[in-house]
Length: 528
Ligand SMILES: O=P(O)(O)OC[C@H]1O[C@H](O)[C@H](O)[C@@H](O)[C@@H]1O
Image (cartoon, rainbow, N blue to C red; front, side, top):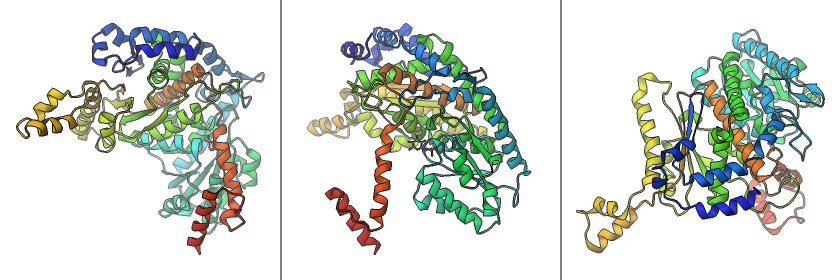
């Protein structure tokens, strides 16, 4: 069925009562997917079984495209590239342009392991044992390892890892403050090695190190597809870890871009992380569409955004160590599917990806949940929670965390009726004031949420969660008929920043619009 025709046909099925729908256990079971020890439950949404069937029909083209991706076809058509981040964690041969890419992937992984071990055991110690690692990168060369390094804190047994991304000198300055240049390893992570933020920070780091050691470049490593540029920067090829252009930046933490994570948690735990993602790949490749977890997430996403018209979705991990997951998913989802053009160049007839945002629970509850519960625009909430924390002595905290997570999805579902609200305030107010006070305490309810649960956040589980979201983005992109693997929308700002460079140094700004001229004039006046 043609996608937008299908979307139109589904609109008449929206607005159902979730509590009523939940009475149908056969429906609920179809909205639950399991993989390994993970369970995803989407039964607290308004999707009726018939709509799920239609959405599954609309996804009929996904398997062929999925297989093309795993097999190395050039599905990133605007850049003429294969999309093979799955090969970075894979074991099967994959042919690109007639050659198997896996030997090189394995070889680079083996070099990363050797280097990570040498840093961790102190055999790599140009000016003393490495105590701190600073990853300098931005976007896909930062968010993945930064998110995962926080997520896997209980598994850290290597040097401390820091992440500098912003061109704002504050980022570097605040990070460098506590560091000893003699015992710091700087990893410059940039797929292209042309990103101005990263190169600016890398040069600053080199100068900082040069004040303390004779050969600063000896304490630098680089992660990039551009070895000519890493060499020009002065980094010896033995510490350059390359990858091919078929790895998209926001899909790259499974390979060299994950080096800082590997140094933090060790090569074995990193292997477990890859293994978790690989198991999700296998599930995605082989499970029936109706039982396929990434497919189910994608169908829920399409139901909420394209069919129901909800403009955003919130990712709410009740897992403090997943604090950076929403930021990571913002890039993964919004850079991949924030598109307005179909693969063949036509304007999309409807919206592509939604706005993705979020914060860990329970913090968000005391900040923005007010709007989620009583604002006029429903926000589909994607909760996640583990059965166990990593602090057995603080299990009372973990039980509260689980109770809060479940309570929020229940509150969104049930709401509070006017009668219940009246009961709450009866005795405190009377007459018209009672009615007024009660009205403020009404929760509409019937608000959708999904919940992903898992036994404990460990490397394999994190790998599986991230791969789950990667494939969800893929399925949504295929169904929308867009290219999820380019990012032309970030180019214009970069070009204009280059043209503004001389202007912030005082060059003639008369070619700029009136607003830009006024802002520039005031900024420059304040610099005098
Ligand atoms: O890894 P790099 O080449 O330095 O790129 C870093 C980031 O910059 C770009 O602007 C893209 O939007 C991102 O997809 C990319 O991850």
